[in-house]
Length: 411
Ligand SMILES: [Zn+2]
Figure 1 (cartoon, rainbow, N blue to C red):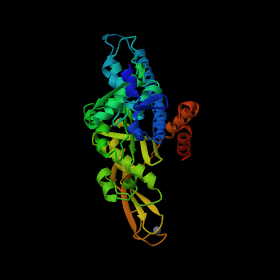
Figure 2 (figure 1 turned 90 degrees about the vertical axis):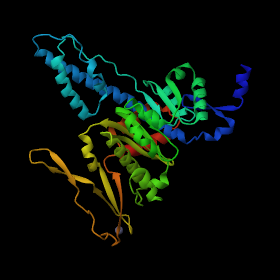
Figure 3 (figure 1 turned 180 degrees about the vertical axis):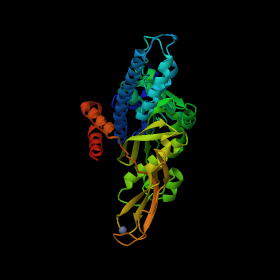
Figure 4 (figure 1 turned 90 degrees about the horizontal axis):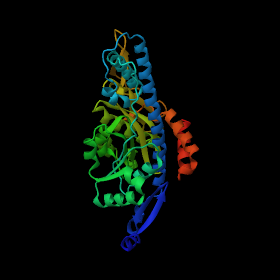
């Protein structure tokens, strides 16, 4: 015991939210107090995610049961006693509206087989699994585990041996309930994510610098309807100081305009979408913010081979006048009606600007492609803001995050 106390002398305790971590006095500088904004915002969005996921699951269960009731009315005989719900369990996590419709079709097919009179969907929604790719001291993972109700396991990864040791020490320090929820592993997060496709309901990327090398594996690790939270701190790159570096990391060329932070968000979103599309997946942004010195996006990830055909409609090039603030967006594609109903996609018609700016007569630079679809889901933003306001004491960075969320909600 004396030995333990002796060791503890080398550390100072930092408390943030409900988590406490031990910081070696030599390394205390690695605690960045401004990052509390980032963690509080993430906790707020996670709470919304847990609530929305539950609502969506309940709606799906209701739909299934209603559909079954309808089917039952028309039934005259029972041939199959098996509960057919089990084979479809994984479908239950699929939550966007389109997927719901698809699921409904499946239910109809399923109901034809499921003839047991008492058939009801009773499957419980599993608590969401969380992965933090670059966990360092584990503070963020510990806060998630201790503060967000209804979460399942939190897997905290780091590729640095000393960090994982710190993380494990901090997990123990936070008591038995934290220790039963948070697991720390020494591993390259990219490999871990690739080996666990669609397994995590939440994936959190908060690297120092660019997240670009993690995006490919992260978009594969998120479960359908799950949440990817991603930070980028390389603002100079994303804002156009090094356009060629931005292109190499994100596949988009930045222009210089007053909209620099919004453009950075839209470049990151376009890049995540591009990675997701490779695996027949697409993103739906729920919140995209610039805070302090970085950007952070919260996007849901879904799988749909037909929806990814719409991606070019969500992306645009920017024409930025070199002489004034004028800029114009050029979407990558357009829809044209098909002969027998429906629409198909065709290349856009351009350019949308003349050779010279009509305001000042100068030429245009072309940037992009950037994400030009909505960058927030207002329903999520309002729910998150309402949630934060109802739990004021639980957010150390209450003022900062309410101000950011209020601004976003007024868009
Ligand atoms: Zn101009």
